[in-house]
Every structure is written in structure tokens, then in C-alpha cells.
Image (cartoon, rainbow, N blue to C red; front, side, top):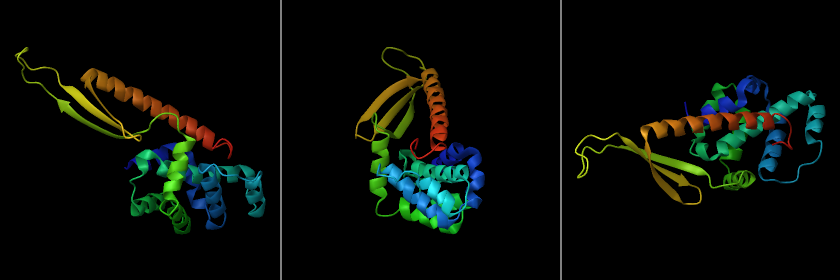
Amino acid sequence: MTTFQTQLLYALGSKVKVFSELKKVFVRPLIQIAVKTINQEYIEEGILDRISQKYNIPDETVDEYYSVIFTILKIHLGTLSQNVKPAEFKQILEELKLSSECIDDLSTVVYGQKRPELISGLMQKTKFYPHLIGCKWRIDITISSSILNRVLEPHIIMEWIFNNGKHQIFELSLSKFHQLRHAIATILVDMQKIEKQCASKNILCS
């Protein structure tokens, strides 16, 4: 399972069930609203209410549909999922029962000419500190040295790569590595919970 697929399934949770309900006729305006949200452009007040009335869909259902569309775009354009190929992107959404017409519209947006602009807009929207975009690691085992003539405990050499071009290299013992792994996993779970709550409310939360 890819990073994009894992993040998407976790972020959407039970909302995955609405994929089969999404139709091109009202998904397209929802995509346009999501794009404007990412680019921090002006959005008319009550736009989701008008979509609800025009297509005779309950308000809360439109909110849920918008949340799904926005989440797909946000996670795909996020740092960890930018290397997802178009064919893989389509296959994942097809497996979730999204119609081919909706998939084509989403693909046009995320792989179109405005892709760099959307990625930049998403980064600006969530810009606080440099983002981690890559991680390399290796196990370092010292068999012997001039000081200690014995096998030492393995250490993890890690290199973190940030979106500002900086590289951070540091060494961890195995116990500290497991502590770091657990801490990051906990933070990611908490972040996903917050994002799910925010995306499910309304455009302003998004």
C-alpha cells in the first residue's frame, strides 16, 4: 500500500463509502471550490448551500462530499505523496469506487498546468517550519576501534532532508531510534485526527 493510499484511507475513514455517490455534475464545482481554498482565493459566501439547492442534496451531505474532494487533493499534493504516478492515482480511486469521470476531473487538476501553483499554495497555507521531504538512514556497526576492542551496539545514522534545501545528519542508538519512531507515529495519528475534524466542518475550517 502506497503512502498516498494509506494517508487517504486513514484521513477519510468512513467517508470512503460516499465515493460511489459522487457524480461529475456536482463534483466539478466542489473541485473548483477546493482549488480556490488551497490557493487562498475568494470564495462566495453560501456557495455550498447553493450547490445543495441546485442538485437537491442535503446540506450535510454536500459538506461531506466537499470534505472528501478537498482531502483527496490535499493529501495527494502533500509532500509525501507528490511522486504518485497518474496511473497509480487513478487505480487507487477506482478501487475506492469513484467514477471514471470524477477521477478524470481530479487528475486534470492534480497533474495539470496548475499543479506547481497548487503545491505552493498548500505549502503556504500550512507553512510554519521547514517540511521534511526525505529521510535516509543506515545501520552503523563498529566491530572494533583503537579504544575498544569489542563489538559495539549498532547505531542508526539518519539524514533528514528539508524543503528549504538543508540536510540534518545525526546518530541514534537503537533505543532512541525506537523512541523517535513511536513519537512520530503518535504525532501523525494526532495530526490526522485534527485534519479529519477540520475538513468535515466547512470551507472556513479547510
